Image (cartoon, helix red, strand yellow):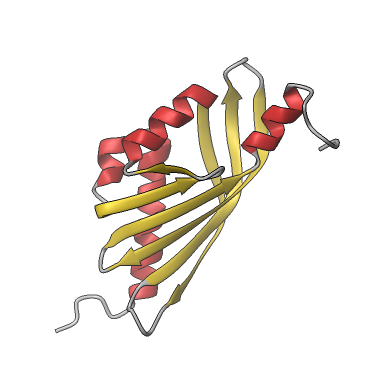
Length: 141
């Protein structure tokens, strides 16, 4: 008997639970939601194989960072059974220089297979904001 009659809702819950653990940060807790062979691609093409690596990267960029979820949408790929989940909102927190931020846009795309996240693509405005802070932005934000 199918224990998961609504894979789209289940995948959305898995992604939001993963993100909640990631924001603590609790890389070990977040890792329970990812598959063996998990691949996380950050803005700029940085590739990580697990939540601990991305938490380490974030620790170099931010004193702390959290996500304010605006929405989580998902669609079932009927050919593969995978669910593509999109979570978007704003990053807020504190840069390493002690200044705060709250309107740093982000968009994360996840692929959930079964009950595990197999891949994630992450986009946000952090690099553009840091370029602006350094006086290197090509235009005003």
